[in-house]
Amino acid sequence: MKTNCLFLCEDSFSTFAGKLSFKMNREIHNWFSPRLNKNMEIAMYGHFGFALLLLPTAAADYLEYERFHLISTLEPYIDAGKVKVFSINSINSEAWLNNRMHPRHKAIRHQQFNAYVENEVIPFIKMHTSDNTPIYTSGASLGALHSANLFFRRPDLINGTIAMSGVYDLTDYTKGYYDEDVYFNSPCHYLPNLNDDRTLLMLRNSGHIHIMTGSGDYEAPDASRNLSHILTSKGIPHDLDIWGGDMRHDWPTWRAMLPYVIDQKF
Image 1: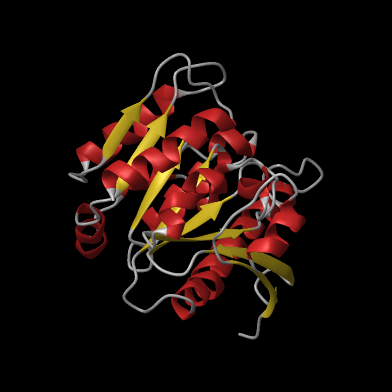
Image 2: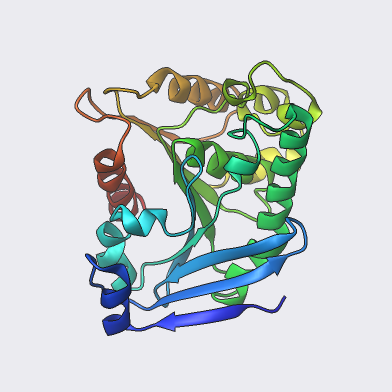
């Protein structure tokens, strides 16, 4: 896989980001994805540490977590070499959030995105870390569904997840459409029926399944409780962390949650 790289050091990053000023290494890479048939960018922050793969919210892009200052909250852990962060583009506007597409085509596009992450992004992360570096996914809102789903589907590639303010039933986004691809991308559907001993063992041994949500405006804590109930029924250890009514479905909540987990749980 050939990538193009734009390297931005400390000073140029301050100019590029405007309001942000970091000491950390920051690189932007991109390549043409054969699985998505389009150019895809990835932002990389830091030098060392476990790998954290960020999945954007809704229809956002690979710089969303930077623009909304979540990367700023992770700066101490990035600079200390505790974590190396990778942030990718979403294709949600080409899938479940695109009202002009036929649902079957949305499901196909979702599967293509999974293949892109599994066969292109994960090898890229290993190339920029090591074969033995653990990889954890994270995301907020729709990004939480993607981050959890990618891990639950492929614990042989991904070591755990930090899912914030998610809904883990894909049918909340499919407007009544349901097929095999919806089933296999909806953790609340496929996890109860998961009986593969090898996959269950990897999930049970993860040690880093963190399901987090607020209880404030526009949050859906029952969605996290439901996922937690399913994981418990399968004997999969995890953290369910439900924050208070002052924590709404918005960036201040996620800027508090993610550094807290990295600081206290890793």
